[in-house]
Image (cartoon, rainbow, N blue to C red; front, side, top):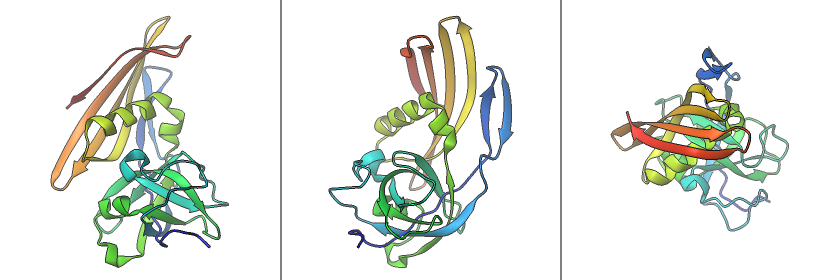
Length: 207
């Protein structure tokens, strides 16, 4: 039996502006919304992914063993009743869960703007291949989460990718954060050497 409290979670797909051929961009829906249910859990010491529930400031989730989602990937979760969203990292797997059912950590469940007493929550789920493909976007996401403790990252967007020179590429991402009634937009820039994959410079700023 699954050792954690039974509670699923939701995910939400959104059009994302991404760089194409450096200076050209296109807006597109990554995947269709998956309608499902979310429950919640307080987590545990051991996970099948070997990733702690405390990862990503407890914005974490468990999925079914046979789901198309994989350990360490990011899911964007949306509560269709109020529009609240959260980006959750997959840290565990649950036997018998269908693809449209997830188990969120308690903190992530509460971030969706619902009371724990509700137990089950109808949600919309979608994988976030954007960050999985944009490794620097995910790298900056981790820095944003560290720099802005107490805030939850509700969305992200690739803004631009520019070739500065033969050995310098600059990528820019925007992150939307919220806590209680406060919202922030953070812009992150990273300049790196594509040949060595080494960071040359990076910065975060409120915009």
